Amino acid sequence: SRAADTPDRPAGELAEAAAAVLRSNDNGVTLVAAPELYPHQWSWDAAFISVGLAHLSVPRALAELSFLVRAQWRTGMIPHIVFGDSGDYFPGPRRWRTERSPNRPAGVATSGICQPPVHSIALAAIGDVARRHGATERRAFDEFLRATLDSWLAWHVWLATARDPGETGLFEIHHGWESGMDNSPRWDAPYSRVVPGPMEPFERRDILHVEDINERPTDADYRRYIWLVDQMAEARYDDDVIARTIDFRVGDVFSSALLAQASDVLAELAEDIGRRSAAEQLRTIAARFRRGVIEAVSPETGLARDRDRITGEWLSTATIGGFAPMLCGGDDGILAGQRAKLLGPDWCGHPALRYALVPSTSPNDDAFQPSRYWRGPQWPVINWLFAHAASARGDAELSETLREESLRQLSDASFAEYYHPFTGEPLGSRYQSWTAAVALDWSA
Ligand code: 9WN
Image (cartoon, rainbow, N blue to C red; front, side):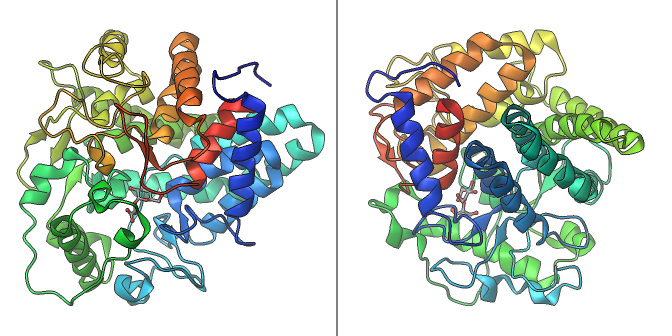
């Protein structure tokens, strides 16, 4: 275990508190993403959560991923929500209407879209913990890997085909929720062109579970979110029909970088168990998306850009999406420039920041809003992703800086969903599972 005491709370105590959150968010079957706001299993949350759980029990961590894999669609898609039996969340299964699709999984209710493909990154991290824990956990990990490799492969292949049929190297998302960064300014321009028509009324539930509704997306945002859900239900979740008819089609640079990174990691795991041709297939996917990410870097700003597929426009708001190359690599010059920028005054080095961590939007960008969700606040899981990728690249200095600053931020033990970048105040949900999970990984 690493030696690191935070000024406010010793790492051991923080780890204990984080473990207690994970235990209390376990509903006996799966971990809810958050006790009140998100009472179901979310796809990318489950990946981060499983990394935290591995420190408590590798089999429990693997069970979390099994539960998710059981909900995989016949197309290969891993759905963004796996619904439990109860829980006050909108939109629930009744609005998603995924029963209209012949490709939905049997015996489990899910949403009909995906989230960023971080699962193999988590899987490899669990493998590292399993190796340290000894033969029994190592064996459990190997068995799980053999049993699920084809599922993870199918998931990556689906993203690379259904979502990037033209082999552009950026896969397409059809909803801001698919990016995991729902109302990020990344999506302002494409969402401005989504104009909802008459629709079945709905009632938001999210605003009942936060202290201040200004920490959440607006009602106008939600109308667009649900409009897109209705469009997909109308298309019976047929990938080809959706690609032709949906009002939101954007090449997502951050998720494409994660796909490249995760495909490389999964290729290594595949090799470990003698699956050579799977490994080769995954390396081809990794190479395509790494290229796509590097090609998306703006020569003017040095930041990577998303691309609106309907208008062809590059989207260049200064958000965390811009640092996608720092996840997947691919060009040393670009990486060196990005590293300097990340630590500079527009980002982690901004003088007003309470903790030197990556804010979701640059405080110097016009779209920046310090307490509204993905428009400014700092998200611990995102900082974990950057720290983890830096460490894998051999940049221990960056990885340690982000870890130490994050542990200071997290030392209030509120395990908030996101934090005010200037005051350090916890925002959104409290006792959010993935926040507890990364706190545990950083302090275990
Ligand atoms: C919609 C669960 C999820 C995260 C997302 C985050 C938020 C949902 C919502 O919560 O999104 O999927 O209702 O706002 O944006 O990244 O996975 O924690």
